[in-house]
Amino acid sequence: MPDPSRLVSELEQLSGLARALGDRARRRGAFLIWRAQARAVTRVAVKSGRVEDVSTSSGSGHGVHVLTSEGRTALASRDDFLPGPAEELFDRAATAAEAAAGLGVDPAGFASLTPETARAIPDGLQAFDRIDLAGHARRLVELERELGGRVPDVTLALTFATDLDAWRVARSDGADVLWAMPRCSLRLSASSSGDSRHTVGAAISGASPTLLDDSEAMTTFLKRAEEAARLARALPDAPVHPAGAFPLVIDYALAKGLAHEAFGHAAEADGFRSSVLAKGGRFRSGDEVGASHVSVIDEPVPGDHAWQPFSSTGVRRDRATIVDHGRLRDALTDAWSAGPSGVRLTGADRAESFRSAPLPRMTNIRIEIDAPLHAPGRFEDYGPAEVRDLLGAAGVLARHPRVVYLSGYSGGQVNPATGDFVFNCKSIYTISPGGVALHKPAIFSGSMFDALHAIREGFGPLLLDAIGTCGKWGQSVPSSGGSHYFLVLEPSPGIRLGGR
Image (cartoon, rainbow, N blue to C red):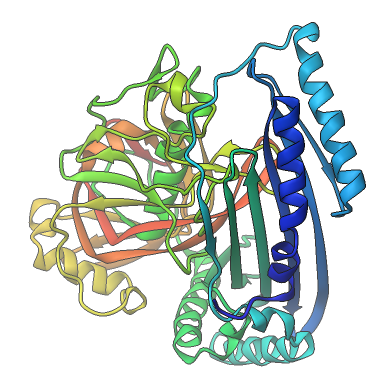
């Protein structure tokens, strides 16, 4: 086993407490899911040559999730691991769950789970015990100075964050899993000056606090950051693109937004009473929702920003093929929602903290197409002129003499009851055989079904490092995903640029 960090060691030492609480639950005729968490976060922020923030935070504790034989539940938590108070905590939660019948709380079904004992501890976690915040601050100042020299007249802000999130989940049926999720990210925000201000971001992520010393990662970051800064400087003078339906190219980051916001959230089974992907609370398995060469897949990817190998109920998380070659197949389910939704358990529940109730959530989600076309080199090698060359060589520009390229993802939202989405991109380029032209970003909106049917070509390998934070019911967890470098969408009246 690799050398663990102090946080992992803290959870390893709780076996006696886990057994005692499990024994107590069995004697009472209750089912217990016990969650212990230890987490440490650091953050360094630099703006305009000055260190604006250096902070650390840490915490640990445990939560008891008690289920009665009738299917009623209660949760309670503490910020320590003291045995006596932990047993009292369980007793109070069990009493509350048993009293729920008198309050009119309806019981909920719970899937049969197979007990598993497992550990998923990545290598290198001791680096989180030796973080040099002053050194990180100096490095960020150097990076900002270097970027400012390459692209002047832009306001730059850099943030480096580390997050080691360790969990142990044990159940009264004997299951006991322990894992640690190391996450680090380096982000840039570049802003133009003047009345028409535009802000453009760039980011990389990794699994070690040594990210700033990784030459390959820093080369990638500098390419992305310089492009973001140049774009922020150029956008105030760019014209507005007219609204309408056009042949589109989207990059992997915008494709991740489409997959996550449109299909991912609609596939979370706790929302099937109102999801467009369900009918009467049951997942519409087998229904056609996209082109036959297009799939949408969610799964934990080792080393990824949103990696989580086990669910918050101690179930190994499965690969979920939400859309399999154009047809619905898997939903994102937990032990409570799998049965009512009529699909298999995929172990998709996540929780922000030991105090939180688990909810079906995504990890790394992507759009994948069959037989993508070749795109040599790295994604960062492709500016709009290189994208034009790809489209020309593949015959896209012969089919559509003018194509609109939407670059980057800047947030958005979807109505899961209808499947209608509204997204924002970072920039727009018009591409034709004669050249490219930059335009200000605009709303990209439409129906998620029309969008998935409109995808015709993909270029390049999968790139899954588009990172973000996903909020749901007051809980925030890391998200990630992507697609091939670029996707081509045929014009459709159900997909518009510039609003509807």
